[in-house]
Length: 168
Ligand code: ADP
Image (cartoon, rainbow, N blue to C red):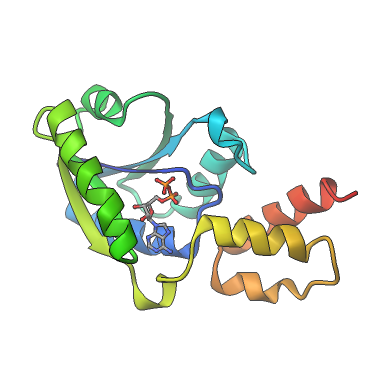
């Protein structure tokens, strides 16, 4: 019962953390897999994203963090994983995830997508929103306590470091 929770995690949010905590007990191993896709022009390098995730899941024994490139189905085969974990915040997520789940089940042998509903507190939360608020915020006078409801403390510190260092 090995599952993969794939994503960009740029950066990991409390919404992702909630899904990891809820999914981990259902599987023998949950691999949180960070997509290495430089074309997406991420804010954080893949190593930074992996480090932030590793720090976050260090007390959950059956969760490990990895990076992958290329087709998810290939990575799943390599890891002997039969399940993918994804989550839905909205109908838009659902419309995106349904064809992805079908494609992955065709590409991977018996690859089953297990879907979680996002917790109400995190339905409006996305990594993109965090990046935008932090990018604009840290270039002005910013009470960054707003970030505490969206990201773990270590991620907030990384955002501050990264965006303060790129400030003109
Ligand atoms: P992707 O680039 O695949 O969209 P993300 O890192 O944004 O990568 O998301 C990975 C998974 O986490 C997706 O299934 C997404 O729906 C889910 N997710 C993203 N944000 C939240 C959130 N706030 N609450 C619950 N699930 C989330």
